Length: 151
Image (cartoon, rainbow, N blue to C red; front, side):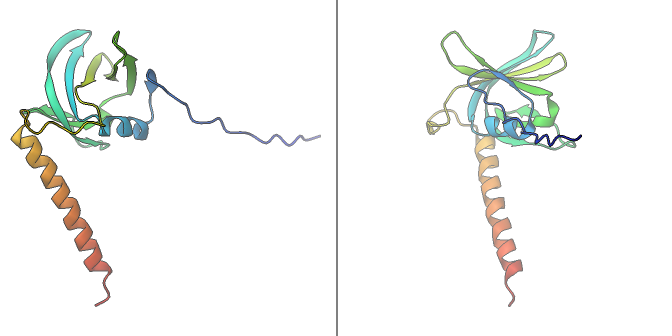
């Protein structure tokens, strides 16, 4: 005697303000719009470095490193096992990227709905990297359009 058991897939998780995220696409979406952050890098809960910077790029590539230099932050989500969301005592959300005994805490300075203050000390290298990415994307689109043209 057989029974038809129609399996109902579980809905995706709903994470609001705190929790652990392991899906790389979800981590990438969260980090992409952070903008300017304060970071604290710890190993075994001992501070190794801290500072402020702009998240210039968030990517998923096993061959590239996460790099923080010159107030620019390039995050490879494959450098971490998971992301943990927390709420501060002042009810602000912050993000811990965890890999073994390493933690990279990202504390947003500006919210994604706020435009960056261009009168602040925006690092020239970070601005140049952002402009380069935009121009490269535009050129890629133009080249793709030229390849599609039958003439």
